[in-house]
Structure formats: structure tokens, C-alpha cells
Image (cartoon, rainbow over all chains, first blue to last red):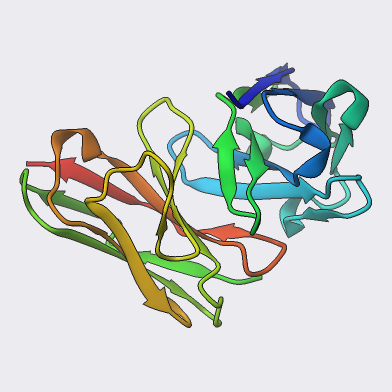
Length: 118
Length: 107
């Protein structure tokens, strides 16, 4: 059974930093693209970033470029999102998601809440 | 980036009704479209991919169609457990985008 477990969310002040983690199990982690998707309170889904199987390619939505960095450690079956220079508009539940063969988002974690507020 | 426009933003229908949600891209996406269902407080769930391919375990009352820029999610006979928000998503471009969502309520 595929399992994705996010952690690392919490309350952070504007301008602060946070690192999210996603522990993966139940599949061969290093053979799948991985993604971060977020959802602000009461709002829709926003795709944030993805990373290729070997970490050689990373893509971001424009609003987070230069501030959020996606990475992975295939030896630890883990996905990360380093979040710097956080803004109030980054407040959201952050989901990690495993991509399918065509990059559709096949499996999702339960999400971790990030709140940016003073 | 590719913009995805969903309609309607919300709808209310009775059990047994046929429900249709549309999604339009601002450029062709070659059937690289997925539909997700999200219930309150839960993670989204993949329903269909490649515009019309049903994900394993998803009831057959859900179907998808379309091509080019215009796509449709149909629920052939609405059930109480289908009350949720539905999102389309394009993955034609490596920078993926979602529609704004359609909230489906049961009358």
C-alpha cells in the first residue's frame, strides 16, 4: 500500500523558514516523479513544485520561485520542501503527491498545515 | 502557464441526477487532463486521468470526455457520497495547473 506522510508544518512568522518532509513507503520511491501541492484555507488546489526521479529536474509555480526549494533523498525514501522568506499567502495545507506515468497525481498524503503569521 | 477554467463553480442536484462539469484550457492539452474529488478535511483523490481513463476502484458512474481544450466530467447517477468538490488538472505542461473547483451538493 502506498503511504505518504507529511510532517514539519507549523506556525512561522513572515520572512521565516520551514522545512517540510514527506516520508514515502509502499512503492519504489526512486522511480517516480514527486510533487508538492498546497491548498489555502477555504480555497482551491495549487500545484507548487515537482522533482524528477533522480532529482535532476525541478519545476516550480512562479509564485514560489526563489523562495521554496523541492528536494529528495532516495536513500531515505523522502521528499522535502525547504520554505524560505515565507509570506502570509503561503499559509496552506501542503500535500505531497506521487505522480503516475503521465505525471497525473496518483497518490496523496494527508497534508501538513503551514501558517505564516505574526 | 496554462489556465484551466471550470464551470460551474457550484451546483446542487438530486440523487439519481446526471451531473456534468466542464473544464476549459486556454490552449490545447492533448488529453493530459485529470479529475480529482476532494471531501472536506481530506486529501484529493484521483478519479480519471488521460481525460477519460477511470482510476482503479472508482465507480463506473464517473466518466470523462473531451479533446483539445474542452473536457467534461460526468456523474451518470448522482449518489449521496458524491457530495464533494471536483477539480480538473492539466499535466500537459510540466508546470501543472488546476481548475478552481466545482462544489457538488445533494438537494
